[in-house]
Length: 437
Image 1 (spheres, rainbow, N blue to C red):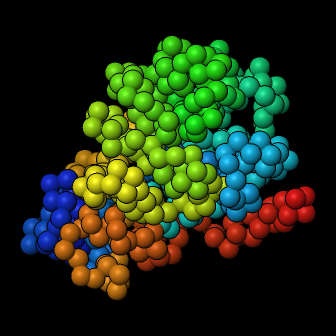
Image 2 (image 1 turned 180 degrees about the vertical axis):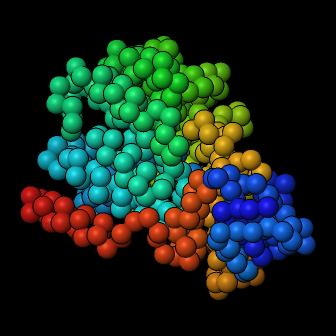
């Protein structure tokens, strides 16, 4: 038996053995996991082009970031400690108008890819302008992505005439259909930047293409109040009235929901991407994730963009989500470690419609795998893998990353990205931002 990559001597976390206790192996061929077992079960005749000794390490599914604006790495730390609307309208939107270009999106998305790969993310859902450049950066980096073209109802980078926004998104989808790593999607920014007609047209495009439709929903109290004033209903009910909520829709944030909103989301089949650290930093509020999960609504975790987080470490997002909801409800049993970890793996895959191919380690699934170095003081001793990952681990503990069967980080070294060049390019762009602000 031949394979491309053979991982040996590791603790392997699968859905059947979430708390592994035996040294095991994983065999990968043609991008797929073809065999998993204990070292005692390793076939003697197996031959591998590359063998990775994972002694002292945990082998687990790669993390799935269900919401990001990757190119916004350029604006990391540019405008902190501000309310959302002031942050957007007085700082971020003007900065985007001045500095977003094809070059900026490509290099800043590649910087984000380096950060994500280096901290254990193997799949990202991204939405921005010039998204074809983000998709190119992800593909070159070997990062799996659901890349959604951004749509707004005023002149935007790459789409100076808003009348062309849907056509532009359609061309983007046509370009990236059937790619092995990049899945195209549609991202209507929000109900306060897109008209009802634009939202419906964006969703119609997504339905025709069979792709995911993303939209920011009920992120702030002001947004919820504006919807009541303008449409006489909540943001969720407004989208429901437009007919855009279904199993292909990802509602991002969903902080200001009532029980009726949760019922509407559940009945529609839509899913939710929750971004707890971004919501905390912008003081937007706390999404009712416990209620969403209790209603059997698929929920994934996202970092949001670096301008509002300010990092892309999904382990930090896991830890924050697990603790935030406990203190919010004054209930330490809420969102146990395993449940939150699932939101960043199999749950995230379900949100993005990728549950048949990624999100867990199983024979026949795509080989999106990370190896976590357990030989660290803060990870010793280990009694429960889920608790250790949720409450003690960080992205810096990820030693090796494999995506689609390709080794993209080996022993902490990125294999697909010239990090020095990327940092130099982004710093050059940042110099222009500093000069103008």
